[in-house]
Length: 458
Ligand SMILES: *Cc1c(COP(=O)(O)O)cnc(C)c1O
Image 1 (cartoon, rainbow, N blue to C red):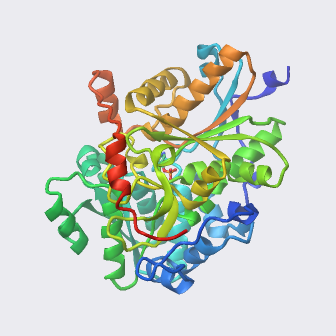
Image 2 (cartoon, rainbow, N blue to C red; image 1 turned 120 degrees about the horizontal axis):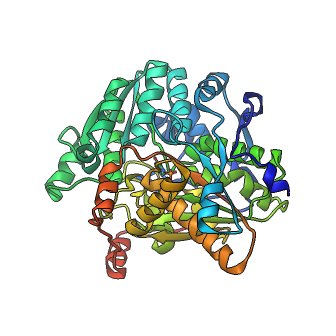
């Protein structure tokens, strides 16, 4: 049997690594709706975007025609320090589940930041440096993005100011120290250092913060400091573009062994790892070359794709960033605390939202308890201690494999294992002690939040 010859880990050679990112939007007949300027509510121009973002990144944000964008050599050499990442055949998990399904996962946790976020951090830091900037500002939820960006900034000698969602800042002091070790400054958000932070603190005293309000603080800090721009680790199309390196490597590894995936699964916060993982496969499907099932997995406590509305919304609580048409539960909605901090964002990337709207992308949601039980099951047989975010994809992959067990179908399941969970042991502790809380917002609660969506046509 051919499957016997497939190694536990499929590694690519350095020479097989992608030389260009793949821009999925180029192959979409119906393109994602344009970003809107938050003041004029007209499509955001390159100049307007360049006031907040680095110029070349703004160009990438607006580019929906070029299918391939070359990866600059400086970025490729950084990639080579921790890439290609392995595509692992989960033989032990398959055996444990007794499933006829074949399970593969693309592991992105093999770098100090512990997640896929470094793939975009290094690209964004590169373009900031190339533009001659002094530094960048950003937000971080669970801390992975801030860590990745501080690594990338220290590599290119850029200043890095991180606004970290307060609950994470308190729960994950060691993440903060990793960032500071790489030279970044870290401020808990909401903070007194920005106007929007002070406003949010006045309205919600004692709040643990949210990604949306940390974004607003970081943007304010960038636009009020000379030589700074704001960078974002998820949600934007440029981030999906950089993360396509995950999907391109996955496809190359599968092709190398003649493996055809049936189902491709990824966890979805702002959508960057999922978008990057599925991009080349969605491209094939859009061009009529193959068929796949694509599944987004999100927390039940922050259900943008499964229970949100497809509409224009603000990307941040402060309404400074451009508006995007996306699945959203409302920019003002502050999701209940969840140990998968990287998935606590109110909206979903516009390209993925459009794919969902077109029926190409499925979505499911799980509670924290479901997710941690999958994480533990996976860790015990596959060895890797997964991040809670990644464990959403594990949960869905296990459930898919169990369905195959019932139907006897030998499906090939591929999922993205976005990172490791060494900084999430507080969550694991709660789970091990049986104290993990689950929260599912009521319909009324979501409806109330959605009432506040901006009144924009489209
Ligand atoms: C940030 C993060 C995510 C979610 O972000 P996306 O942009 O949706 O990919 C998932 N997993 C890990 C480990 C993360 O750090």
